[in-house]
Image 1 (cartoon, rainbow, N blue to C red):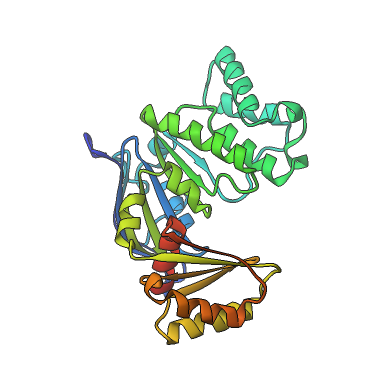
Image 2 (tube, helix red, strand yellow):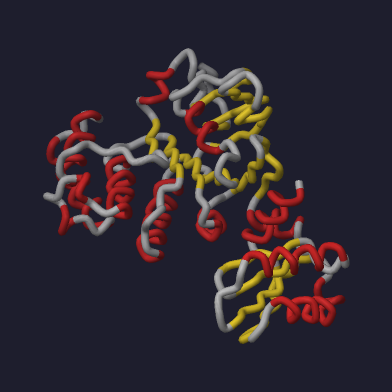
Length: 318
């Protein structure tokens, strides 16, 4: 154990290979301060979940050094497990009722009976699970199962909470309610390592953000710092009256790139987002390109970079 460390998590030159050929985590270094909410972002397969599994003692690293609350996960897994909470990406629950799931966790963490009852009622209400409290967990919807996973972990106090895609399947109101609750706990000193594909969540709650791609951390900083770094980016959103086809966008993207007009084009239903650094200077030409591939345009909007745009720029171009 390293005493008096300013960091709750310290990772240096971490490598993990499952087959000895390709690195799922490829020489990453980062730290998370006590009481900080740290976002680890990336596409599927970027290495986020593998990193969390190492930090939570589920698997051993291939090489590099890791300290969690001053402990080495390989040498002191029990000391770490006693002080952390983990919400995994995969489904995980006991085959009993919702309220009994909470009781089981209260027992495991040796929470006094009356305190456990009060916490259970509070979490059932917070996560809108009161009406299904006597429903068996395997009968719940996907979103309800995820809410139960998070609620169950919040039954006990912890120093670090690891959240791997915690809000999948939840509506925007519930997602915001959970984020606010996590934010309050972090303000009281709890450290959070958070992964999500909802980048607006990371923008809303994270103190610092790292973006991973192919096992490496490509960029790190606050949301404001990352937006400033890619501040030249602008996004032109063009919305059609009907869904667009991916091949249309691929042709548009290739044309924009070859003409040095923009760096990327992303399709989201009826809207294509064209991303570039000096779009305002070539706006007329970009629109001419766009009209060739996007028929029946309903609206056009030009805006500054968001964290989504930063993510796309980092992952696609590094």
